[in-house]
Length: 369
Image 1 (tube, one colour):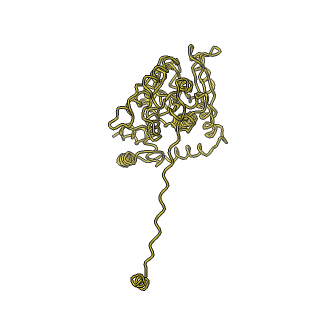
Image 2 (cartoon, rainbow, N blue to C red; image 1 turned 90 degrees about the vertical axis):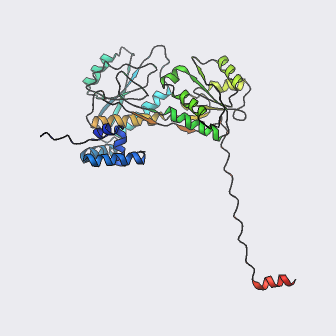
Image 3 (cartoon, helix red, strand yellow; image 1 turned 30 degrees about the vertical axis):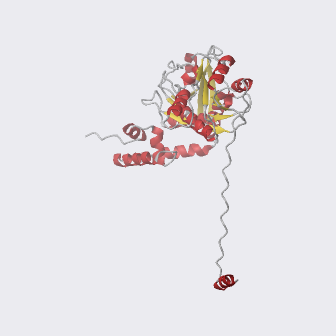
């Protein structure tokens, strides 16, 4: 009789309907896994007879300790030149820097290749990667839906550093834009703002599967929401006249947007920041003047993507995954001069001094006086 294959983290993940990373973190007691989910994973592992592979654990432990002391190979960061779009800017650079730093710590080198520049095609790139024995590829974000299907995917493990990729579908690492916008609105409400307005470019929102506008609208429409309704301005291009008309008509007291030229337009319309109005950047990497807002932690995203990519290579997992997963990291709030500061917490009143008990003699003297 043929014996059943030994359970693995991946088979447990499939059976539980969870991601491989969640199951792995739960079994190792690492990461931020919900306690109930972690207990469910451990119970399923015990019932299936799962036993952790100490050799694999030792390999990953040694990788984390290597700090670049042992060279293990080259990873490729792949980018696309997209005609009609401005060259990729600070977000890509920060992603690459975070990925390179983490790769070096784990004994790898991360090299960048750009398709569409200097005669580089996907087919030519495929030959270069194969000739150099590069099996791990980090796919950088694209404005348009990227197509990397002409690579020989039987040879590669991959991570895409954005939300969605269908050609081919691979694992993704990206900022949690939806959660980050909700957290941003909660901060603004605590600062006293009650009429937040969202100003976002349509193609940017669409590329995020409308997570910016979806989070904003869900906060507006939640029962008992503390904010008033201001329709978002979702625009096809950044124009001062369109913004000014929206700003004067709906009178938001704080604007959420990507680009700080909106601050100039607000001031031209009579706003004084932060005295009368506020502005919060949805990505502080794009600010051209000091402002408060969200740091989408591009370097952290690059580092996490490289960790997951190297983990795939260590497990000898190449090819298109059966169940692509998405790992998200929330943005971090950054203080700035365009948002009023939180009111300081009131100081606790000093405790009253304990009353001294009077002796009987004193009380008697008082009664006689």
